[in-house]
Length: 300
Ligand SMILES: NC(=O)c1ccc[n+]([C@@H]2O[C@H](COP(=O)([O-])OP(=O)(O)OC[C@H]3O[C@@H](n4cnc5c(N)ncnc54)[C@H](OP(=O)(O)O)[C@@H]3O)[C@@H](O)[C@H]2O)c1
Image 1 (cartoon, helix red, strand yellow):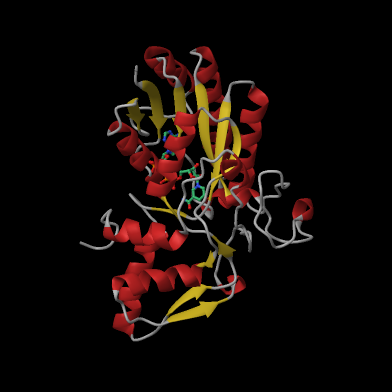
Image 2: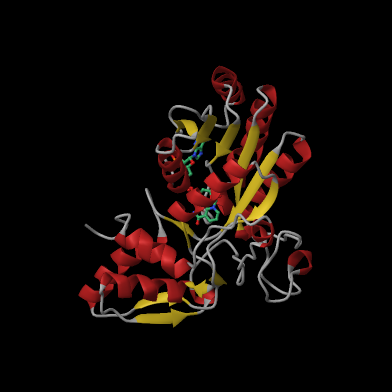
């Protein structure tokens, strides 16, 4: 059997690095990874050249402008990466007969019943629910999804949530740092307890993406870990794993200084992955423990 050729963009990031590693160890795939230095996805000419040179069966886009706060100040830059570049990648996929797998976010939802775009009751959002982003980041990601749907190239969108796993900034490492500072200062760590979603480790999402590629599935899929948690729950679980006896004080979302509005409730129901029998994401606590113990996410 010939290995499936896959071009993964954004391999300098959390998901891109894990996915390129996972596919690279799997003989069913022939993977080429690109990071920002080797392929800037906002450069349409270069994107088309790269795809034409490689002729992959799939392009998997793991790039993103992910800074939710900064996106409020520079929405144009967020739209360039999260929206316009998706169009370049879709054109490139179409030019070489490839399919495009793209990744989106729970922040396309408002999480507020009666909020923008109508909102929904507090139950997990499924793929048929109407989005209503509250932030520039969320709007840019939704624009990218819509651009891809309208394009005509065969496509997949995996909407995930609260992704962590490094490299770079992530909630787990931020918590370990602030816990250390708080312990030395003799004060508790303060963490938001009324924003509810699902932490998803990048290894589990990479495994789910691989399953989708192998299945040749198409369309929109919710793809986060199972269960629901607040940031406060997530921080508590990290401190227990790390054996840190530091207090975690719950605070309200309003008390957290932020420019961007975030959905208070963005748990995702994996309705389509489940109905196809290809849902492989674990409960978020299992994902965290595996990331900590087996994958070296915790401090050495
Ligand atoms: N992180 C989360 O909490 C979260 C939650 C829900 C959904 N998602 C979605 O999940 C996907 C993967 O996220 P992630 O956390 O793995 O992201 P990440 O760690 O921020 O990685 C994104 C990568 O894209 C690169 N990049 C940015 N602009 C680029 C450009 N113009 N050309 C090429 N590369 C570029 C970044 O490089 P630089 O580092 O140099 O900028 C970075 O290496 C994204 O679609 C994201 O929107 C993430």
